[in-house]
Image (cartoon, rainbow over the protein chains, first blue to last red):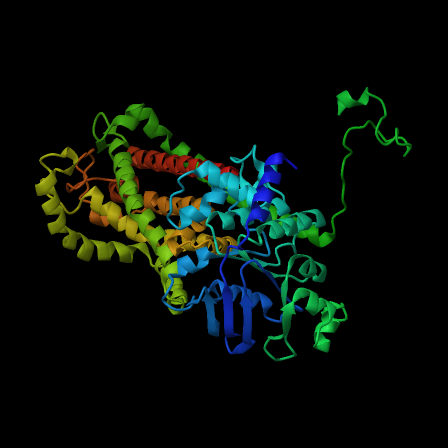
Length: 274
Length: 334
C-alpha cells in the first residue's frame, strides 16, 4: 500500500462526525402488477452506519433497495405505497427533482455496469456529465474518487484505457468511484460482490469500511459473513409462500446474528434455510 | 508445417506422452458429421451459393449488354450529360443521371436520418408505454407500403403544398446563394429527394428503433442511478451502443433512395442536364432515366441503358462496402 493511500485512509478515519444522509423507509409496500411483493417495511438508515438487508431470494430486499432511489418505477408494471424520506424530504414528492434524488442516493448494481466504451477517467466523470455539471478540477476529482473506491493504484497509469478492459472486481470498484464522484449522501449496494471472486470481494468490503463515515451505506447481501463483517445495522426480510415480503426482525447486526428474537431469523442466519 | 518438420519432436514427446505422428505443428482436426448435419449444410451452402451466383450473373449480364455502349461512348460516358444514343454520331452519358441520383440521395438522407433517429428514440424512450407497441407496428406497416403510394401522395399533396414555401425561399435566398436560384420550382431534384425520403424513413426508423431497443438495460439504469436525465442516458448509453445500427439502417434507407424509380419518374420534369440549382424544375436520376428511356430505346440505346444500370449497380456496391467498413471501425473502436 502506498503512503498516499495510507494517508487517504487516515484522513477518512479522522472524520469525527459521520457525513452522509439519513434515509427512512416508512410503511413501504410494493407491487408488480397485482402481485404484492413487499408489505409495510419501516427501516431507518442512519449516517455513519452500514445497514445490511438480508433474507432469502424473492423476499423483496432488492425491491426495497430499488425503491430507495426510485429505480423501482422503471419497471413498467411496478407500483408502491408508503414513503421514503431523505433527511426528512419525501423522495416521491415534489420537494426534490427525481434526478437530484438519484444523484444524492447513488447505487451500485449486482452486475458491474461501467460504460464499456468510455475510458476509465470518463466513467468516473460520467455522473457529472449526466447531471450537466462541470468539474472545476477534473484530474483531482478522478483521483479522489478512485482513491475512495480503492482503485487508484491499479488504474492510475491507464485512465485513458476503455473501462471494458478491467476485471470484474475492478469494474465494480470503478462503479463505486463513479457513484462517489457525484458526492452522494447515501450509497445503495445491491449484492455488489455476488459476481466477484473472494479477493475482489475483500477489497470492496475494505472500501465499504473506509466509506462508512463519509456516506450512508445500505447493502443487500446473500452472504451472512459479509453482512456480519460490514454492517452495524441489519434487517431480515422474509416472504412466506404467496405472501409479500416483510421485515421479520431488525436491529444491531451483532444482536441479529448473536441473539435473534425470532426463530426464523435464527434459522436463516445459522444457515438452516435460504 | 514443412518448416516445423526439421525441428524434431518436442512438446508431447518431451513430456513423455509419446511420439506425435508428424512434427510439433498443429494437427489436422477432423470430425465425422452426422447425416442430418451433412444434409442441412448442403442445403444452406446451396442457398448461399445461389444468392452469390445471382449477384455475379447480374453484374456479368449488365457488363456484356453494356459493352457496345461503352465502345461507342468511350470515356465520354462518364462526362456526357445528354442522352441521345440514336443520333449520328451517338451522344450519351451518365453524368446528369449520376448527379441527379447523388442530389436526390443526399437530400433524402439529410431528411431521413435525423427524422428516423428522432422517431426511433421517441418510440423507445419517450412515448407513453400504451402507445409504444402501436407506433412500432405503424412504422413497420409504413415500411411495407408500396413506393407508388408515397410517390402519388408526394406528387399531388406534398409538392403543391411546398410550392409557396420554396417560392419564398428562392425569392429570399436566390439572390445570394446560386444553388437556391430557380426559374420554376416543383418538379425538382430537391422535391424528388424529399419524396424518396418518405419511403426511406419507415425502413430506417424500423431498423434503428430495433437496434436501440437492444441497448443494455443495466447500463441505462447505471446512467439514471447517477442522477442522469433521460436525455443524458440516451446520449451516454443508447446512442453509442446503437452507432452501428444507425449506420446500418441509414444504409438500407440509402439503398432505397439510390434505386427509387417511380417517385423520381413521377416528380421530376425529365431533363438530362446537371443543374446546380436544386430547387429548379427538371432533372434525372439513373433509375428514372432508365424507366423513361426504356420503351423508345433502339439497339444501342438499350445497351446504353444497361451501361447506366451497371454504373448504379457498382455505385451501390461501393457505398455498401464503405458502410460495412464504417460499421467495422465503429465496432472495433467500442
